[in-house]
Image (cartoon, rainbow, N blue to C red; front, top):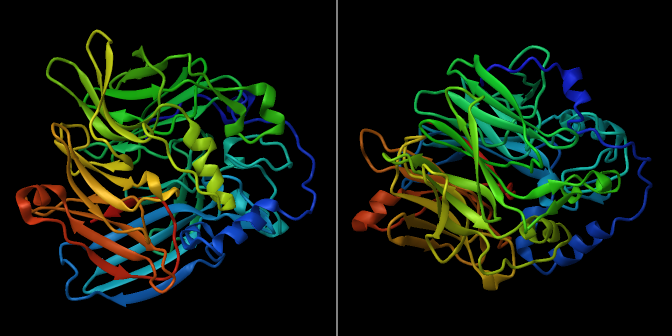
Length: 505
């Protein structure tokens, strides 16, 4: 990542990044959320995807690949996601809170070797030693000790990053945790400059030349947005700290040839409620305010501009680029507000299914003209998430991207299919696995020497007689040539970590 600023950790803490009020010890009492989840799980098999993984992890396990497994799909797939949702009788109240578990799937010579371990964060280590939950989470309030730093809440549960031959487990706003890429043992927190542990995004970007670009946010106390550029060998090339009023939680951004494009939806921190609520509940959606789009010059982080548009929320962007005339184009999964955070993603933890509403999770293209005019255009009439574009270029133009798809009528927050969205013609291909399947985010695996590539990911089959599977399928350009979509499935153990991942060919 790029070099950190002169902010010391002590100075950073003084800014109030993540500092909350002290809280009394948690009393021992039956947890109604845990009881409700247990009752509902007996009737809804798909909820088994939100039960705990074992504390000791999974594997190691070696499985012979079937003869039909494509030889082009080889290498190591890493996945990460929330996997410890309940501990000492207390169940988290939000899917985002579960402690992170990293899975490793190594595919070579006709065999799949796989195992998984929890990330030994400071938070999880302390709680396991104490035999109880000690701290609040992103979306769960527990009385406990004061939160002095984002890493006090860091569950390392969102994504993994492979850069400069190192593997990192990432979270929403804390330090990366370095993980041994072979054993998955936790090496500890990583800092890009001695003495500094600063917020770092769960979705950094690596460009065509191996340079790493990232952001990080702190909006408890003085609002600060941290910008990073890190060279291919892990050297910090550039770091800058911006003061941004009403800074929301910034989950993702887009890297183009010349810019970091950072949309800032109107979700504002409310300090008056921070002492008695979880972090995300200390925010207010201000639908009468604009979504601001911060555009930062890649060559000089101090050069910025902001344009405004209608209010909306986005978790993930497929990517974007710049046209020859200077127009910036972003492809995103857009929501009209943040109801998804406070409804379905919370309700599922007590076994309640909450359907999305029409207009939620809509694939759109957002254009920003050189003069600052912003327009949004729907690209497909479907509910989708976790976009991935089937191109090797990190900042150049692409013609289509893939998303996971869900059915509104199913009344559950699961994805059951995959679709390809053509940027000019809408949905071009779609594959439905069926109601007994939950599909996790897939990755783009480029083909070799111009050959078609593959999508690879995990599907969880909720029928108890069939375990989850590693799935690969030909990439969309092959589908577009009329070859159709085939799926190669490999059965694994009975676990699920809905997650993000990284692939090392």
